[in-house]
Length: 468
Image (tube, rainbow, N blue to C red):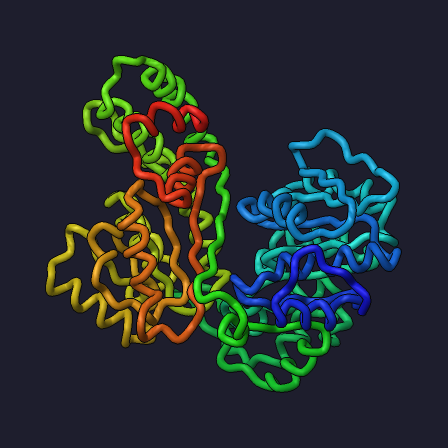
């Protein structure tokens, strides 16, 4: 193919584009960290150059679709316009450009999402591609957003789905994702016919003589299903990508909940006054940063020492990520409140025996057991810890993903905690994901770490004001 890249691809990305370039409906089932967003952008630019597509509708989770702007600017070799739902007032078509419309998947849980894109689809459907990034967000066939997206996509000429883990619980997860592309791909227009072919069910009666529900007993004909899926998809895992770097970094931008944002704005106003006071001490400045940082991470400690939990957007995104990926995961958090909340949330979501933890409240004996269980017990999937406590000396090489729920300013702690997974004994690539509250002190902290800055009184006085 005669496509000229703006940024050179890895070999697996080149192969992905070759396989999906001209297809009307295609799935990029590429594990997190292998660059499926770049592949999709190149695919859209290729179709634009072939005069087949001039409008791209990207539907993605809130933390992901914000990143598409940067990725498009980085990788797209043709002139573009980018319209972001709720940020840009009106979609304007400009001749000689590839047009991108970015929207949060959650918008389609309400009628507002459909209204926002319906006129666009009606006008450009024949030269449009619709992309659902992290397509497991529509695996629930009963969800309103799933029904809405499948319905509005029916007449769009080109469609793509992207995810690293198309099956998070069972092969039945595939049905609605593939139906979005084209129900003919799997050969079933009815979920129950699809289920009958690939799954044997059993009836279970709820307690106290309640109603009966059907649960999967076992799956069958999976070789046939795999063959069908391969005909319209490209699948790759990090372990298959020999030219990938051993460390892969990603950032998930989080929009604070309304409760967090209100409190953050109030604290930020006071913090600005403190930072502009030339007589304010380093300690006073640092205290204000910590307060802002705590709000970003879902809680607040009053001057009287009372701790209050807030609606936590980071916790929601953490669960979204864990449902997207396979394998064992390390989750680092700097506050005990977050660590204990994460432990409780994951135990409820994934089961009591899936998590181990190391932080101040855990005894030395239990810490040793936690490491051993994480390394040797297949049922233990999550290691939650404080990087200052668990970030030194431990061998956690069974993890292929490391998530920083929060960061501190300590560069040494960050480097040491990264190397708990990336060390001798690690046989796979390791993906590091930073959860960063958008337009907050979180961004300053990550910037400081990336620039290898040491936080000093001068730094606090000059650079933090940019983020307040």
